[in-house]
Length: 468
Ligand SMILES: Cc1ncc(COP(=O)(O)O)c(C=O)c1O
Image (cartoon, protein in one colour):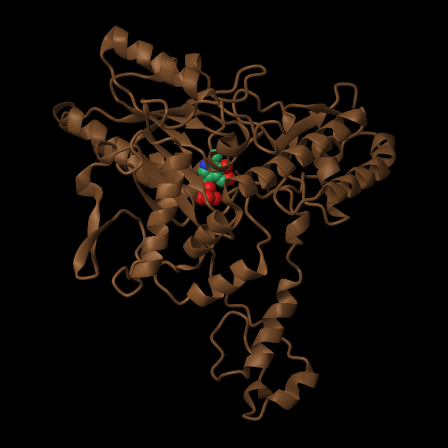
């Protein structure tokens, strides 16, 4: 969460006098302070209205093409979520059926990701992919420490290899768990990790390689199979056995449905663990994620804690303790409701819209596509080489005027010279909306082309504060 600083200014909320009739106890005689606890209670209607009105300033989730996170679910899912928001996931003994549905979700994912023995795969729900990645990283570190205890005690520092395009959760993992983060920089038109760049960074202290399906920066899939094969070769030559974790935050719920022939999952013996975000293409509201290990061996037993469950002990692996049951139940609802064919249809439609939108942008002549929406339903583009009057930040700003949130950002090392727009197509972002976005873009392009130069070059800071 954002780390906020306290505020002691004396600002108060202003209560509409019209609501005064709902103030039988006179609680609103003094307006509630913004940054201190109000000394007395408010009627629920007044409290609701004050908060509701303030939240109207948030963006429209449907027009938010920056987020990967689900922004619409069915009424039945909403209903189940409301019914389960008072259930604590950790109270396995009190809510055994919630625990059972979580177990079924893990089993479904083990099947989707081709665990060699689905009954042997172990997994858990988390608050999102970030927590899942922390857990997977911890397991890799512990396995490496077990194999290298003497050298670790003597000061060897574990490292993890990944592309510079990883989501920030991996840099967090390395920072929090004191693992050296070995980032393969982007190079030319290579915008993610490949086998060669991964191999070049591996040594005897590498706890694992992270392969991303697909990249947060541009939606491209990293070549997981090639990376695994390169590591197989390394093992044959040197004896070093380096496991791979697949960060399938988004792609873990796309590839099984749209790219069944792509080999990226537990079919590769080197893949030790996989994570996904239930709240991205798993089609559930935030926050739910999943982490799965191919078998018990991949998850060191000493990391697992036991909680009381129907008089017995249920193994759990999590960073936090209490968590609402709603999202896990909603995940099971989506699995049950959509089935394989339903998920395939939803993801196919997202890919269709993404490709259409990417092609539409290219057709304007103002943009050069970096990716085309044919892996994740996500694409990135930059301005065409002959465009000098505006940049991607200007486009992002102008689209914002119509409510569209299309982030613009700069790529990491060694391509900090490249700035892109990224568009994430999700369930609910229809072909009609895509065409409306294209029409709005066509409307602003003549004005952008008429600018003397990009606003940045004229001393205006880019407004996009987009973080991966
Ligand atoms: C590849 C990748 N990994 C991890 C994450 C973090 O996921 P979450 O938001 O579920 O914690 C993201 C989020 O965008 C992502 O794209």
